[in-house]
Every structure is written in structure tokens, then in C-alpha cells.
Amino acid sequence: MRRIAVINQKGGVGKTTTTANLGAALANNGLRVLLVDLDPQGHLTLHFGAELRDGQPSIYDVLTAATPVGDVLVKVRDRVTLVPADIDLAGAEVELISVTGREVILREALDPIEQEHDIMLIDCPPSLGILTVNALVASTEVLIPLQAHFFALQGLSKLLDTVTLVRQRINPKLHVGGVVLCMYESATRLAGEVVDDLVKFLDASRGTACAWAAARVYQTSIRRNIKLAESCSFGQTVFDYAPRSHGAIDYARLAAEVLGETAVNGGVGTAEAGAVSAASAFAAAS
Image (cartoon, rainbow, N blue to C red):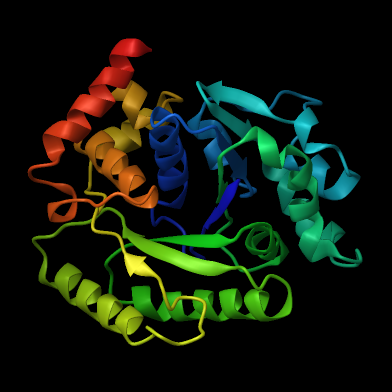
């Protein structure tokens, strides 16, 4: 199972939206997808309309009470399974602080279902605490959603410091796979400058031993699209809510890149028709 932590300690950058819709796009490609909601806000759980009932176990129980992860799984879509979360997870940070081996609890909990899924995406909390460390230890790859704002690179450097520490001390397989630009507005001068700085920063690491030496800025940018915001309020992915929207096109093309295919023209242009066709075909089959 390919294990990817979707992470940015800054909130509101499109992290949960990316986890949900990239996961759905990967499932549309035939993969068995596991989504893990590791954010106490539980937004990924709410995105799929899977709000927890009283007494229903969640990722909190997996981390603090050794509940088997198989007992908390919720199927939210064809080929998509969710490990849900709610506000109880906020207490895990305190409860785990004195637990020996607290950094590896999530990894060990996920190992028994390794063969049941092809790829896993973990929606990390907007912080760099013990929950995020658990996500990084349980993953081999990091995907960073980023807005093209002035302070984006400053926040990125702190995140990369954390990735480096986890890689050095606990998980030597961990590496940064790439950065995806979310809520992107290509017409603004600032966006272009931030992207240029980001590309130069990553290019400077080529051939080194750092965790982001092979990282890339994905060609597909996720454009601002109201359908992405609307879809979660209906408990749906953008492919179910608006399969011909820019949001569906962009995430379909991002999934192709994550799977090793090449995007064209930064998310728009000649490949757009193919992405629309794929998204529409799924909607017709649902």
C-alpha cells in the first residue's frame, strides 16, 4: 500500500479538499483507497457525510484504546474507505504524551490492513504535534497542498524541518513527493513569483540527501472553483456533485500525475476534454 500524508501546518490551504477529491479520483482509476481523518475538526469525515454516531468508534479509539482499525472503517464511496474522526481526537495529544512508542501507534495500527488497500491518504491536522508525527511515521510520502501566498515558503520550511527530523530519527523511508498549488489564480503576479521561488528552492536540493531532493511542483494546479466548496456541504466529492466542473477536471488530472502520468499545460488545455470525459463517465456509471 502506498502511504501518503497530506500535510500543511497552515489551515485553510485545501488540505481536506485535496485528500477527499484526490482520493475519489484515485478510486475512479480503479484503486482501493483508504482515507484517514487525523484532524480533530473531523472535516474529512464531514466531507463524506459520515458524522459519527454516539458510541461509534473512531481514530481516537485506535490511538488511545488499541481498538483494531478494522473495527472503525466506514465505506463512504465505491472503492473508498474512511477512518473517521471527531472532536474527541483533540484529547489524544494529551493522552499520548506519556505513552511509550507513541509516535508509531498509527503505523502499527494500519499494518494489519496493509493488503486490503492500494493507496492511503492521511488528512493531517494544521499543527506539527504528535498526531502529525504519527502520520509522518505511518507514511512513506508527503504531499503538500500550498496556496501561492507571500508567507507560503516560510511555513514550508518549518514543515520540512519536521519531515527531516522524522526521517532521521524514526522513518528513513519518508520523502516529500510533491507540492500541489490549491485555490490557484494564475493571472496574479504574486502567484507566479511564489511558484518561481518554490521551483528554485526544490531545484537547489537535487542530488542532495534531503527528504525533498526528488520533490516536484505538480503541473496540475487546483483552480479556485465554487463547486469544490459546495460539494462538501452536500457530503459529496466534486466528481459526484459536479463532474464537469474545473474542480473535477483538476483533481482527475492531479491523480494522473500522482500515478505517474504526465499532465499537460498546468491543469488546462488539451487534456481537459479527457479529464471531463473520465469524470463524466464515472458519474454516468454511479
